[in-house]
Image (cartoon, rainbow, N blue to C red; front, top):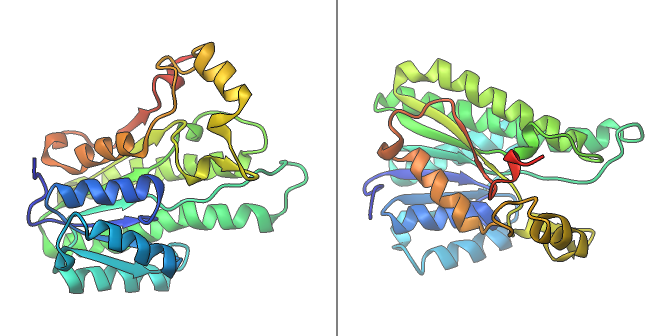
Length: 260
């Protein structure tokens, strides 16, 4: 299936985890794909792997920080210059840490909000402007989290930023629909990616995860997900198969969000 033949896609945070799996999915379906990231070595390594599955002229790494307006504008322009257009944007870049609400300072909250909330805004705005100018519509998909509407200790900044990103998605969906631009989100649960490592330990391999989420089936499917399982839903939302899906946030969590 090559749903994105002749299309161009920009994936932020596209060098690892869900972002890379998404970039690979689009490339395999015929799209020209640009991955945006801050670390040149990681980005170039991901680009080399991506080029094992797609021609060089259809792949690009653009180095930049989504929390910087200037970087975003430059990276979006580099993508347009390389491919002539952007038909889909995947706002995947994120960061997380563990903080105690009453002890955390702005120096711990601000970077998370800058990447997740403001980064999503900067990228959405920059790409939407170019989509509107071209007049052919497009799709924007945010990689959010089920934590956008769940409460967890030591995660107030991350959860609040994801909640802000979800609300931005809904407002953007309303404003951009008249231009033929659909805006939606996926909300992953426990997914096996580099962000699964907390303080050097993969939380998906801990006894508490196996006990609560697997053996007791807090996750009804009794396992963590793979990044490619999220990527498939992102690709669906960006495709014409989802032509009447607008302003939706779809959990990809093995059923975790419906348990209590």
